[in-house]
Length: 314
Ligand SMILES: NC(=O)c1ccc[n+]([C@@H]2O[C@H](COP(=O)([O-])OP(=O)(O)OC[C@H]3O[C@@H](n4cnc5c(N)ncnc54)[C@H](OP(=O)(O)O)[C@@H]3O)[C@@H](O)[C@H]2O)c1
Image: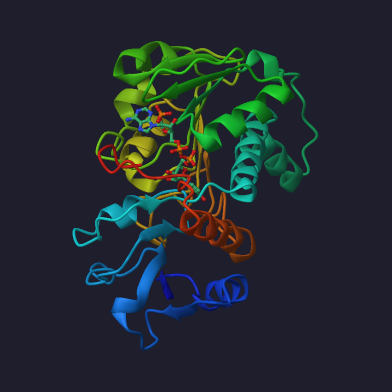
């Protein structure tokens, strides 16, 4: 029985080694190795070349090594077997670190004081709001959104959530669907997007949406933090919204084309903070363990956790 490590853009070797250690009774191959396609029962994937997973007649399940499966679903020849996306406590915790870090950086005017330090400027105009005065709206209230919400709440931010289907939480005001979007936006000072990229979310973070965020809040304008998927944002609209004062500032971890073009105007904009799609990184040690356990449980008759609903795209 073979497990295929189908990865592009990352080094497959540490993944191959981890799976070999955890599943010693299987053959673990990468796309570059010679292998019998009939022997492959499982594939673990990150952006495999289109069509590379076709013609695996005994494939039982596909595992995404990331939480987002948009790149996999874009392959028209993706086999029609159960597709599992990763849910991993370590990955989720890293995303929450990122969200909390950047909410606090905007709240505490981190870039302003860094700039003042570089200029040797001692200046304090006492314009520091408290966390409880700044409402954080989390778009995409799934595994990562909920964990980030818990940690933001612990710091004192009032948190609101927006999801596709209705949800009820004691601690957060919740909104759902297109009908819930207006009120959600109107109550949001810091918009955190942890949405997957699907046909419904593509291009959602655009100028029109930014213009419906709460105006006149204590940050001096709404702020965007986006660590979902680049295709959800319209980058020209982010720049235009910053120019129009529709947005005060933004932190972006994901981009419509990655790596970001060295000539992109996003790099040098003074109100933008950019990171190279590493808000939450998948590490072989933790994720391979999780997938190996799922394979063993599945073979013992258990249900797969984190199954993707292909009809909605996540
Ligand atoms: N930047 C990074 O390093 C990094 C790392 C890992 C993941 N990510 C991104 O983070 C995303 C979220 O991960 P997750 O594990 O939290 O996913 P998840 O548990 O599947 O949660 C997705 C959330 O988005 C909501 N949603 C989906 N479509 C929507 C729509 N059309 N309108 C409103 N809400 C919608 C879902 O609503 P329901 O609750 O109603 O289903 C759910 O709350 C991933 O898809 C991936 O793109 C980024």
